[in-house]
Amino acid sequence: MEIRLFKPSVGEEELANLRSVFERAWLGLGPMVDQFEKEWCEYMGVASSLGVNSGTAALHLSLAAYGFRPGRRVLVPAITFVSTATAVLYNHLQPVFVDVDPSTLSISFDDLERKISKDCVAVVPVHMGGHPVAMEGLMDFAKTHHLAVIEDCAHCAGGIYKGKRLGTWGDIGCFSFEEKKCMTTGDGGMLSSDDKDLLEPLRAYRWVGIDKDTWKRSPGYTSPEVLDARHWYYEVAVPGYKYNMNDVMAAIGLAQLKKLDGMNERRRIIIRRYLDGIQECRHIRPLLPYELKDAAYWLFGVRCNRRDDLIIYLKQKGIATGVHFLPLPFHPLFRDHDEPIPVAKEVWQTILTLPLFADMTDEEVDYVIDAIRQFDRQQ
Ligand SMILES: Cc1ncc(COP(=O)(O)O)c(C=O)c1O
Image (cartoon, rainbow, N blue to C red; front, side):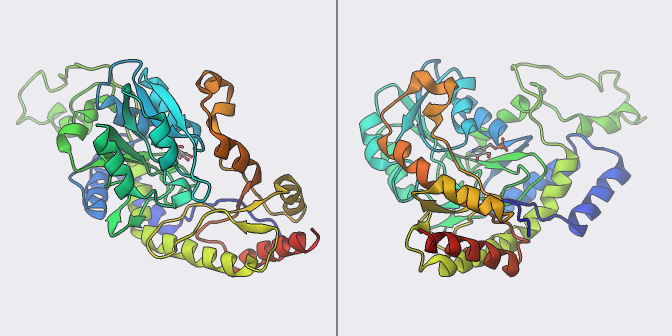
């Protein structure tokens, strides 16, 4: 048996939406993006959402919204995907790597207290693997230190913490719809906020600085009612980026959004099966303190002191694995930002991601569990 690590769950619903986009023959930024933003706002219960072409773009723009002075510092967890920190660099700000909590692998509150300084302007909590950061504590910390809070929700679309959707606790929530994530648009991302004044100016930034959508102006190009030779006119007042979502992505996203809760539920059921299956293991333990009520877990993993041997063992059985993530200061890009992060530096050597996707069958899950138990018995 060969089992992938992640696999998008796509089918007839996405194809039907794509057909309508093809029939309209408007593939770029258009009505489907509008519709997706509207439905995402409703799903999240927020005032404003902005579709972009990646989670990375969402993070970049969310920090750009504040126009922070260059050189100011932004607190990010040491274990996360590189984009959480490159978004900081894109804005000419400095990432400060905060150690992780040994249990949840997300930003450590103790280390936040050590790393905070008067130059810090924002904090970017990452709901690692979908496990919620204790947002009430983080918001208190941010308030005390006057920090903007950008939630990196790349791993937790659809997740709820203490009755409130992840991505609505902070000032802006940034989501990734890259192909492996809780829901996908192929590549894509979304910013969400209740603060329209913060988010709406970013519309021009995601569309090369243009403050009008071409598809909304396009009827005027041929309409005899619009006897205005300047129908094509637009002005650029800000140095924007080509970060827009397009209608092909949004068509897939609209179908995925309808399935999101179901896919998250299936992932929770699989995780429950994994947890039951490995509970007797002596050398292998769950990666996170999984709370399977409301959270949306994107990642299931384990910890094992002989992590690399386990990777090889599972590979020989056709089971794909991954490591999420190498602590960022280990990358050459961030060598100059080497802060003390003792927990991250130790724990990352034991962590291992196992296959998890909504279409994974019970038979596939049991096959992985059996392989893990066999490895555990041999130790
Ligand atoms: C924590 C985190 N933040 C941001 C991103 C960036 O998302 P995207 O790949 O859509 O740019 C990812 C992608 O894996 C991620 O894991």
